[in-house]
Image 1: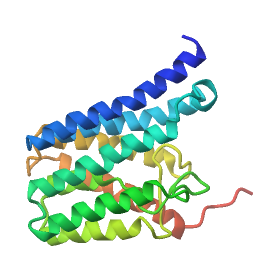
Image 2 (image 1 turned 180 degrees about the vertical axis):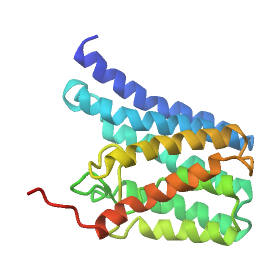
Image 3 (image 1 turned 90 degrees about the horizontal axis):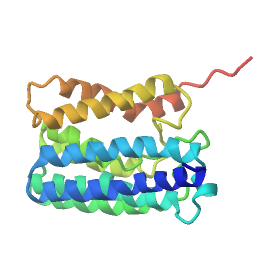
Image 4 (image 1 turned 45 degrees about the vertical axis):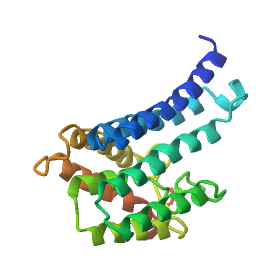
Length: 232
């Protein structure tokens, strides 16, 4: 394959996320939540590998006819925001007005965040919570906390999208990447496991989800608190 063909193939891989989003949505309409999340986990995995491939094959130079950044944002909105928000609303985990509040605040704030030109920091982390609602909603499905806890988490993270808080990019944030990347891979594994066993309350996958989620949520903030050692 030529370099141009490989670069084009990366765009095609990214676009496959739209298919996985549709498959997840069809499962959600049928309220087949474990299948929905399995498709979202597949989309999450694809999203994790297409970026490094895009940089390796320099898609901006070798396949410039497609805007990879825009394509990625479209797919991310579907798989990170739209489908998970629908699932949270339809599942009844947030009853009555709380469900309406969650679905409105998630979709609205995420649309604004995804269009924010300041979303990336100098170290390739995210400025503000990067709208990874698929991760939060999956954890809520797995743990089934009191709906007030879920509502608090949704409201807090919606606000955090526009606060000067840093959230690591598992692949591109170099600081602590030796820990962050395995944690992201572990989260993907535990998420798939939890969905595979239909979120069985006794599954050990839930502990893995909690530990990896807490790390990925707080690692960037901890980096802001703990100064980086300067090379001598």
